[in-house]
Length: 529
Ligand code: NAP
Image 1 (cartoon, protein in one colour):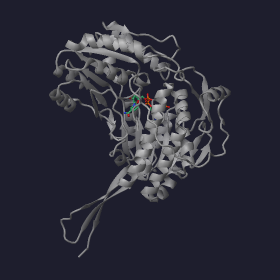
Image 2 (cartoon, rainbow, N blue to C red; image 1 turned 90 degrees about the vertical axis):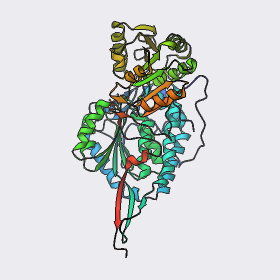
Image 3 (cartoon, rainbow, N blue to C red; image 1 turned 135 degrees about the vertical axis):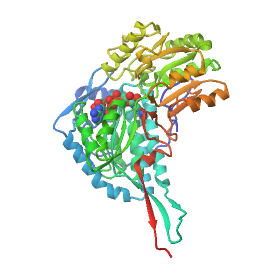
Image 4 (cartoon, helix red, strand yellow; image 1 turned 60 degrees about the horizontal axis):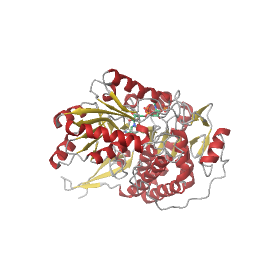
């Protein structure tokens, strides 16, 4: 299964996976809740409508809320849907539904939980084109990237369908003759899951796959900008036969998010908070979860260094830089945010990187063939890129290519490369989350590591080198949770995803991801003589 998220011109990045069959579609009006503009976009963009849902999904049913909020296509500004604006009351009902479904779901044999997750995966694959179009419509990313996200997203359900059967306990040799010491692993209970807009599908399944495999039930609060993918997943979960109350979704507007988040973090029926998003929001949720001492998983912001040493293959470094920086228009938490290039290779790297940006990247609507750079998610995101560039240029940075808004439309920005960048500039101090590559020139390995490790976050880091001793040294000394060595893309379902420092707590995907949803219980079995 291909798990890469970004296209490379020289690499086929989508691998077909086997198709499964689910039960027939539910007899729901396909376009309920969607506006005429969405219907015409949908008619052009989607091959079927039942995945376009606009209500919350609680206790196995679609629920309205007292208000609605608009979801817009960031490429055009067109309204796609009016979605139920779930508040505290709906969130509480969803928690209650998840809690009530918990006992029965945790008692379902692991193999059967796995079968249901596999059916859900198969339905995602069967509907992959429509799901991808939904992502492009609400997030803006190019359709090929959206297709890659759906395969990646479905792969988490497949992976955890298999992992469900491998939740092993232990028998510990006892120090007393009349005792047996056992370790059981049990689901933590209701998991509240809060996700961002940049991977509207995969950030949900990476958590929910693990939670459901472990025997937990979930309440998902998707991002305001991209609730449609979360709701489409609910439709497919329902079709797959996931029991009522096991997967609940409460979309809400940005205005409601703090109140809904607080309810999820403080309700005693919620045992676990799993969050992906900014470090600032993660800290709020951590504080709120403290009073009821909930289990927490935090996948937070990054500020990835991308180091090119003199010994690197410059062409491979350029191709890695392109993939790592510009997928999703620079809006991924593992996107390189700071390029550190050693002085001997610096000029060649900058020249070739600029050429590659001009040749390989094309800004446009994600639905247009050949687009590699869609819009940023909203105008605030565009303003942040502008602010970082203005600050850098005012301090002496040079614009090698790009540098301004793209004529295509208000949320579009030119892929940008800056040189003569120093560590006093804003873009080297915080995550840009946009298509900006700032290049800092360095002299020694020590200097590069000191700059790379000066951040208070540590999610991903990349470096290019052909010196084996240097490779080991730098891989060990980079203060990050994930390292790409001569590789610009590293996400894979079977590998642990997560960061150190203020990039978060816990790991997702891989054989470790399921532990986030399991409690360890020690059973002391006495009187055995
Ligand atoms: P964000 O503002 O923190 O939002 C993430 C989610 O939290 C959204 O659903 C948001 O709802 C919700 N939220 C915001 N404030 C909240 C509050 N007070 N209480 C409860 N929920 C709240 O992050 P973002 O800007 O959307 O996403 C970008 C960030 O996510 C970047 O820093 C990126 O590095 C990080 N990220 C990390 C990973 C990882 O795996 N480590 C993956 C992807 C992204 P609204 O949408 O309604 O505001």
